[in-house]
Image (cartoon, rainbow, N blue to C red; front, side, top):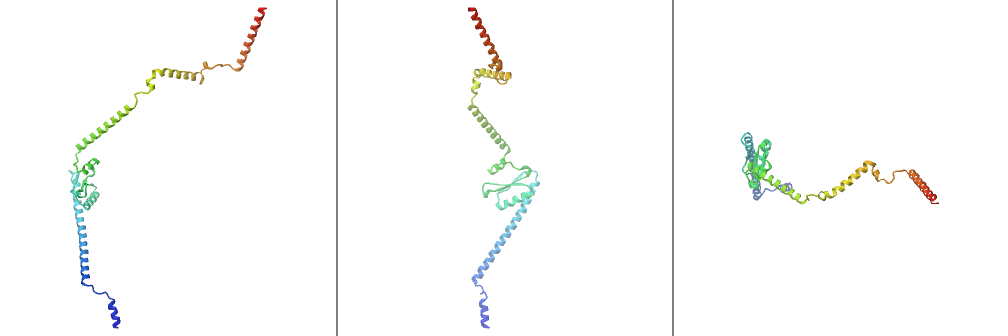
Length: 229
């Protein structure tokens, strides 16, 4: 019986030492701090969101405001503000070159910024529509001048006239005659003019004409012989 009880007691977990108890206490305190920090962060996010919801709502109701610029804020705060703006139907942009200077600007839908305006904000400049219009006109003028210069260079590179124009007084008459001759040939007899054909008689007519000429020739020779005797 004593042996059985001894074995049971030996198999039971030994009570923690003083060092182990201290480590567990510190672990519990650290876990409690982490949980508290998470709860505080969650509460702060909720409060910031509520604050931004009111800010965006006031911005929408203010008819004199077309846009609103906020001071630089952290990434989490910017994310919350973007989400609130999207839900409210407001356009938002994060601007600024580095993380420390990043800020958010809100725009009402009907006053959404142009690419030129956003580019000015990204460069840290104030948006001035009059200055932007002057810049746009200068760019257009420069583009027109470049196009005119390119056109002028192309005109200089091309000859003013070709050899046909230059020597038209020499080749024009010959070309005109050739064209007239071809036109006459086509109109009179298909392809070849009748006047240019060597013989328009049939073969039989040609043979008959040759026979007649031979008879006439023989008759002439006979008359000459009789006269001489």
